[in-house]
Length: 204
Ligand SMILES: Nc1nc(=O)c2ncn([C@@H]3O[C@H](COP(=O)(O)OP(=O)(O)O[C@H]4O[C@H](CO)[C@@H](O)[C@H](O)[C@H]4O)[C@@H](O)[C@H]3O)c2[nH]1
Ligand SMILES: [Mg+2]
Image (cartoon, rainbow, N blue to C red; front, side, top):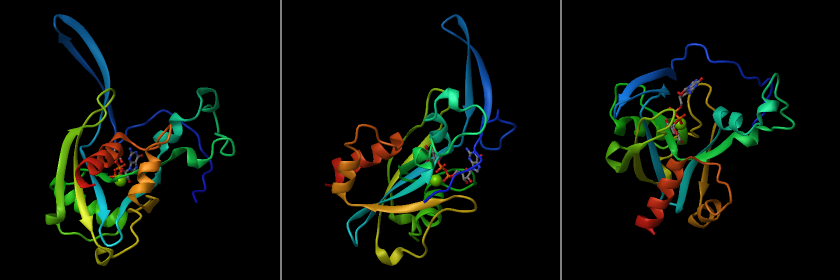
């Protein structure tokens, strides 16, 4: 259960995570500008626990999602968290992480599985399923998606992420995932949908 308080929005100061800039260019003889954000490349991992036949996901509060779900008029000043509870910003996602170290995509994926989900898995268990561009409007980067089968004896801690991350590890059966993705609005990113559909197509 997330307890949220003291929420307000301010313009961004210098960030080590996001670098805003404007690209100036001439395309087909027409001069144009495009505002964009530089972001990190990333990995995502679709985890399937073959001991109990469940898919393993992470559930977490996403500030950007929460922000997007509050009407503009109520974004001014302190946000009324009774009117806008934290659940508005809680997503279900694949285990995933940014490439912010000088490691291979596989090694980053291995680390994320351990930090976020508590599974200690050899790199050789990771199967690359795709590589694609995230975003494409305001920001874009490469994401490498992996599939990884795990067993209960690979679970060495509760997961939950590092430092101030507040991640809940959840498990869903194929039937539960099927019900979840049949909702009218799915509070999950496209990488999650991609992974699920890849699994339905290739593993069932
Ligand atoms: N943006 C930002 N602002 C802060 O103030 C800020 N303060 C700290 N951080 C740090 O950024 C890192 C983000 O965590 P991850 O490495 O696990 O990456 P994810 O956020 O899980 O993102 C992945 O998964 C998503 C889909 O599931 C995809 O869309 C992304 O492409 C993909 O990278 C953490 O170390 C966190 O401590 C901030 N990050
Ligand atoms: Mg993550």
